[in-house]
View 1 (cartoon, rainbow, N blue to C red):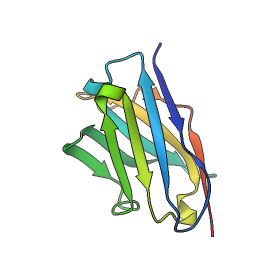
View 2: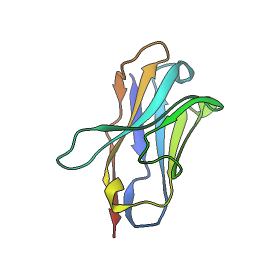
View 3: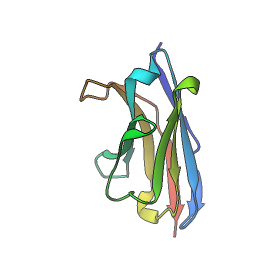
Length: 119
C-alpha cells in the first residue's frame, strides 16, 4: 500500500540544524511532486517546500528560503528536508506529502515528525 514515512525530527536549540527524511513506497515516486508541510500548535498547516526534479521545479515558502533545502533521490524513493539556522518559530509537526505531477492536490501524506526548536 502507499506509504510515506518521515524521520529525523527532534529537539534542538536555535541555530542548530536537522535533516528530515521521507521514504516513499507503493507508488511511482519519480512521477510525483514531493512536498513538505508543517503545522504548529493552534495554527493551520502551511506549505514549506516542494520538489519535482532535482534541478528544477523547486519551491520554498518565504519563511524558510535560504535556510531550508529540499532534495530527493528517486532511485531510493526518498526525499529530504535539510533545515539550517533553525528558529523557535520553526517548531511544528512536519509532514511529507506527494501529488501526481499533473495534479494540484496532495493525496498522499505521512504521519508527521515533531521538530521542536528551543530558544
